[in-house]
Length: 294
Image 1 (cartoon, rainbow, N blue to C red):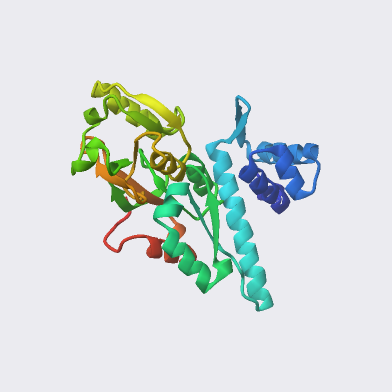
Image 2 (cartoon, rainbow, N blue to C red):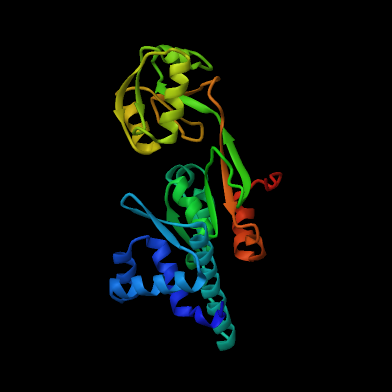
């Protein structure tokens, strides 16, 4: 393959497409027509001799080769930006990009983000996403660092343990179980629970545990995100099992559920990412000093 056949324009266009995984939105951002973007990506795929994306139902997903091309395209763009800034004798304003979910931002990363933005507002860019999207953003180079609870550690990324919490039962302080220091899953028999929507990882694991303990229960309400779940518990709608990093508001207490596994937040990054001082600096700020990559 002649490397001259791979144009910088095609790489830049593919990086935008990889971020949106939607031809219409990507073409709009690039200020070109959707057919033109199709042609660019098809030619790039043909030149490289590999499919770069595939369709699953109505969704477009990058192939592993597509992730690698998107990661290279973004790295190429960053190097070019840095070179041009150095050439002009001006500083390159390249923010470090962090991808994480709602829980991590609310209960784990807030102080670090506040401090970094106070020091230099343009130093940090944030992406809010679920754990699957977080892994995709790191794999494609859209984010330098990702943070989430991971059931299975990715074998293609470096993972650093940040913090581990028990799973706790959130309940009113006058509830019958509030007098206990800990509870077990079977203690939830007969209770109405505030739970995430079906098929969410937390919901699936909780239902499995309740089924194993033969604890009958009912859905009080389905809610997305710890703040809304906590709010419903405070309203008296039902009880909820949440990660132990979620602080109980006034009138509620949290009791560890001893037969549920602890949850661990990990930071993940590309294996060579720490050669970039921006990424190394961010990781040092959010990770305990006694943790090591796994």
